[in-house]
Length: 112
Image (cartoon, rainbow, N blue to C red; front, side):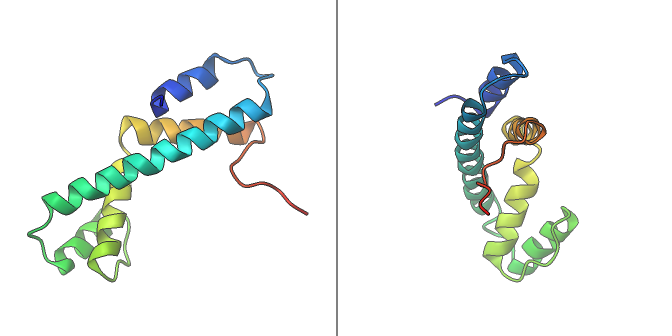
């Protein structure tokens, strides 16, 4: 499976008339990689912050811009998101999603 950065480079190399189906497929692949990276980050943080109290983790998630965590799991998830968003993979997926949105492509199917 390609990295998110490689997927972004593939999209950038395509012309503006790239098939919507191809872009949606890349977005789905990137989304799966994004969530995999996010979960790996959460696991790493859980190991690293094992000694911190729940209160300390909640304070840390609030300081990272994600207030409102009510328990250890929420705090770790929010800290993982704050951390993952600043990784090359996280930023690449954000760019991929923004590019797809400009083309009118998203993961959610429109149904009327």
